[in-house]
Image: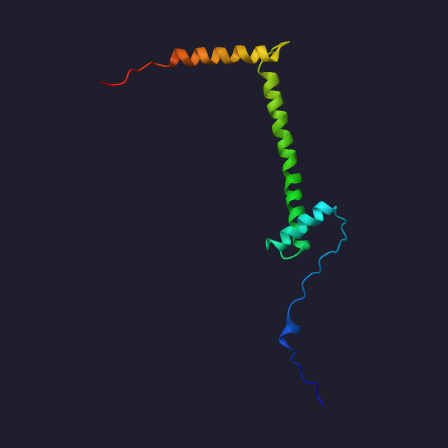
Length: 117
């Protein structure tokens, strides 16, 4: 006698999804309330979604960090290469003088107009 093929129900033919890792996380009361608020607001289905979103944001921030540090290094080098620094004992007086020079330059460029009659 020959064995015949058995049809499985549709749900049994679905591909098996990979299982997600499980972690236990301790939260401060404030973070626990924050997670609960996000879930209650409907922005997330559950606490796991909130944690995953936070981790994705942290990962993106960490990946962007080297580029930001390099940009800061380039800006520092550009500043160092731009010439000698200014030595000043009174920063407020320095900025006051700069403000006056800017106002004087602006006033020199401004043309006073009288209204048309």
